[in-house]
Length: 269
Image 1: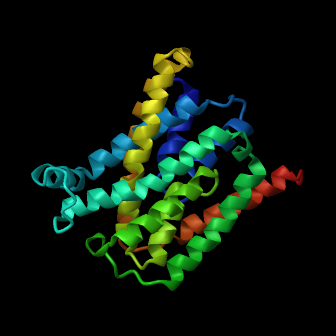
Image 2: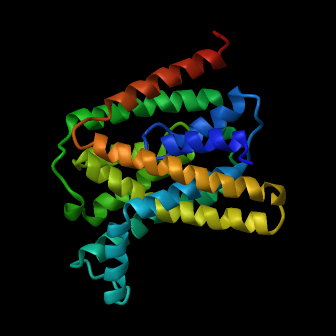
């Protein structure tokens, strides 16, 4: 039987992971504002793995091109090959997140699960996204991407370790500052999530294998499956939306949610 707790978590994860609204922030708030307890980091990661599978399947042709290019060039950095170049850019852009993520793991993350902090980050970065999305060109495509741009987006991704910031939100924002097309930078943002989520998934699998959260194994499987379904649907809809529209609805949503959280945190309601 499907756990309703996992169902709602997977729905939230699937609908928010690739939209610039902060999936981790929503998952934390779900635990704080409902009768369900905190699902724990392992379940959080299982939900992200479902999203990872959705990205891989949706962008399979692009990923296949990258893998074929790497194989044909014996994994050497031949940047004349489109697939190889994109693959290496994703790898290079991931390195900052791995380093900063290790620092956060050492420091602990309890301080990041604050409702006030999430509210502030939702509002602050919505304004930054609004500025980037309305003031900069939409002409560039991924074929024009250079290593400097990939690294800047990779460093921006590190800001997402603070819930409420949104990994997709800050990477898309940096891409818009650099003048990339909305759909193209959203695609790069989703592809960039693959190595980070994969690394986190390996850690979660190790935790489950060693029995630290053994009782949650069934819940983890459900989380992966349901998150995949909702994530794939969200990617499908978002990529079509960005063909003709802007990020304004997400910006408004972030501001409204952030304001409500701050009012609640300060006891207004």
